[in-house]
Amino acid sequence: MPSFNLLLLAGDGIGPEVMAEVKRLLGFYAKTGVADFQTEEGLVGGACYDAHKVAITDATMAKAHAADAVIFGAVGGPKWDKVPFEVRPEAGLLRLRKDLSLFANIRPAIVYPALADASSLKREAVDGLDIVILRELTGGVYFGEPKTITDLGNGQKRAIDTQVYDTYEIERIARVAFELARARRNKVTSMEKRNVMKTGVLWHEVVEAVHARDYKDVQLEHMLADSGGMQLVRWPKQFDVIVTDNLFGDMLSDIAAMLTGSLGMLPSASLGEVDAKTRRRKAMYEPVHGSAPDIAGKGMANPIAMLASFGMALRYSFNMGKEADRLDAAISAALAKGLRTADIKSEGCQIVSTAEMSEAVVGELDRLAR
Ligand code: NAD
Image 1 (tube, rainbow, N blue to C red):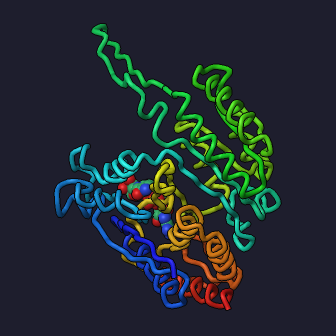
Image 2 (tube, rainbow, N blue to C red):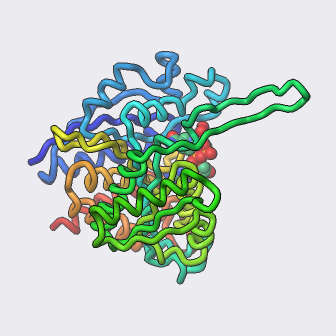
């Protein structure tokens, strides 16, 4: 039985509730001989601030570096609204992304047939949707310098953010996009604003060059990011893998999220570079949703985003694509039985708790594995 080391960082609010359901899944994999996941746990976010006055400790960061993958819940909540900016709960998440150099953020937007009516778009536009938004996560305008607000002394202020991309940053995210597409429907759509931005010109040029050099077998198209946003809500099924920069990716992935109906359904993966020696890559897996303070402690949280995030770990960190497919099928089967947490409730369906939903998923997994 293969063995892997995980660092579980549950965080705040519903984080620990949905992380408990990952542990249930790990128990199932150990019991059935699929894999032995050794786990360590750590504090992050508000929970870590309460204990150590920082959002993540150096000791936990060392464990994150050593782990085969980090599984992250969610952080934040009104309790920590007034803590100093540098130690706010989100600082823990940002440090993990930065220190582990997790430059590739993969967000699938999948519409399970049973949930097609939960989308704000018509059923025919989203039924069976399965696309991926790949966002560059460690560069661009969120990190570029200078980043300042200057008082001009005449009653005016000037704010500057700087959008910067180097060739290597575009090359490595383009490679991830083409590799992802090869394992899917073999199509990449690259989105930028080369009509008005120099970074867009370089982005386009580098993606073309990487394609011509190593990935001619993959279909590549380019789209201006604003037009891409329009196409995403017009006919999202035209896409397979969308690759874009940090800023556009932030927006386009939220648009794609809403196509699927609920935040409680959306997983994500953030990957670093492959280590030339070990052939392993640093990786963190987390649901897209936050700590949902409004429902925390009530047993109402939808565990599917968290379970599906673990499914992405199976696929991208542990080379267990078949197990990942099976987990997706188990989620789909549990939904098809009419089980729903409150966030995705619809008429004629049975409302279940966090634990009941994941019990049902694990039950379906067991059935599918036989
Ligand atoms: P949120 O994602 O926590 O919640 C938005 C809405 O979606 C709420 O009504 C919530 O009940 C619902 N929701 C979210 N996840 C759900 C789930 N699994 N099941 C059922 N319903 C779910 O976003 P918010 O309310 O804007 O933020 C709350 C806190 O979370 C804030 O402190 C924010 O900073 C933080 N946050 C953290 C992350 C993260 O840890 N990655 C991401 C976003 C927000």
